[in-house]
Each structure stands twice: as C-alpha cells, then as structure tokens.
Image 1 (cartoon, helix red, strand yellow):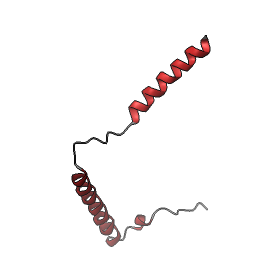
Image 2 (cartoon, helix red, strand yellow):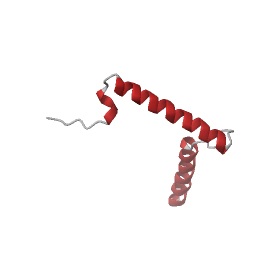
Image 3 (cartoon, one colour):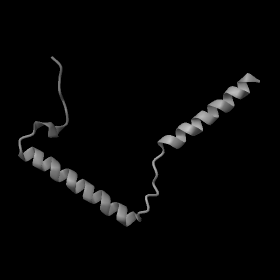
Image 4 (spheres, helix red, strand yellow):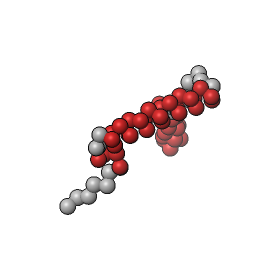
Length: 68
C-alpha cells in the first residue's frame, strides 16, 4: 500500500517540477518575427564582441586558463 502512495507522490512531484522549468515557446511571435528578433540579438552580440576585441580585451577567446 505504501509503495503505491509513494509512487503517486513521486508522480505528482515530477509533474510539478516539469511545469516549473518549461520554457514557453508561444511568445506571440510568428516564426518570421522570431527569426528577425534572434538575428538582431546575434548581430548585437557580434558587434559587442568585435568592440571588445578592438579594445584589446583578451577575454573574447573563451577561457583556456590553466592552473599552475
């Protein structure tokens, strides 16, 4: 009997966790609008990275820091 109760409780908890972290893909945008938004964000990100590289920022390459 308790095994069944534990199973039910675990199932409820799993459903609650699944509902919390799910991303809402229905943001009211058409696929074309979403592509435009994403392209703009990528262009801004690339411009920011280029500006950082032009300013001499060494952090743009990734992060291959080694411990000595």
